[in-house]
Image 1 (spheres, rainbow, N blue to C red):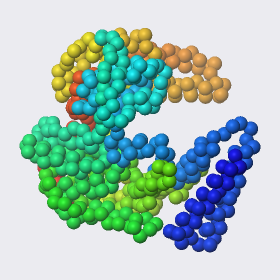
Image 2: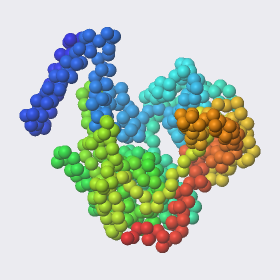
Image 3: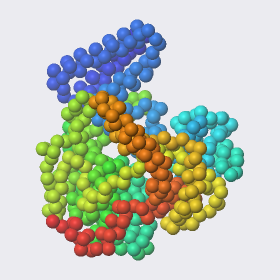
Image 4: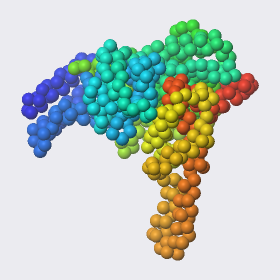
Length: 548
């Protein structure tokens, strides 16, 4: 135990000496660092040697590292050697496996969404297949993480997977793992009215090339306007964001300026290539899940008055991370700079340098500033990217949320697929009233409790009446109200019929059409898409949105 303590202390001081070789600390800084490392080493020694239960030194250090980094921002993270594969996937979109997402329901893990043309898809796995065993190892009670470890492996290796599929029973399939490179643009196509649509889900290597190729292909197919969908895209590589903007704006435009502690972090990023089209009408869809590189793309296209933004306010992440390689095959991602888009605004929403009770607070309205786009339109910093046309975010009913969380829509779709070998195309498929009635029957013996806001408020009222000594006087009325509410709630399935039918459509269609179906089935009830069509159909409105 003591040996471990002295080794830790030795390497902490070697680390400090190494840092001093790179950074000029003031004398008081060096003393403060040295003092606190001494304190930490002493605490580590005492816990290691005298704590009543056995402790794991590695786990103690990892907890200390995570605690230290947690005090900064959520984007500065340490990755152990065991986490290297996961981090590589985050940054490159590449791993070796079968190419499918999975989900846990009860005691088993199920296939959720095989990706087109990868091993799971080629082997004929379907959403809803229950994974019983992998290479003879029982998967019951295994976590999704455990099952993932069994499914991943070296590219070229083969394994057997035993599944249970409704309507067909137990099946065994042989799958050969491949190097999986998830596409940045999983879908593009002309949807209607010559509008070319591109869904960009990540910013890993080649994102810019994939967008460029999609634009060229869509124009060749007759697209006269384009939509770039960045909703729920959490970002990625900064230089790929520059490349994507470059598809639509000329060479030499300043897109991002980064400012950090060191000179090498202060950089200006400009477009370097010839664009594909600087004139074609362009709409970018964003929401509160659009972050980081997504905000660079949407924000710079807005600042340069090159695109109309439709949706909801973006997330608000104006921080740049750099990957640092550490010893023993470990690494860390650390925030090294803030970025500013063409108008000069910083879109960071939370101030991690000034926390209240350990939590970062939003940038105060009093210090937010107005900036100008290229055409002189007003834009504001400190709150993400504001769309040019705000569409109120759709809120699912409590009933729908409960059905989703309890996997009941997912399970009904499995049952539907077992009885219906094919359906019409994703753009035209509709859940019939007969299918909806089947869904209601399916739910009769299922549990899916939920509490409406009205119920919560009624409970508060009843408790308040008791506190105020009014309950006995109002008991009859309150009880009648509660009974009426419970009766009304029984009709929630029919009252939310349209919403539930849309959710069923999505889940059923992807049983047959996978990634393509997931995108195409949503257009008929997509509020942002409806507004996009309206804007493109009115040239005066489109041009007016881009001018002062």
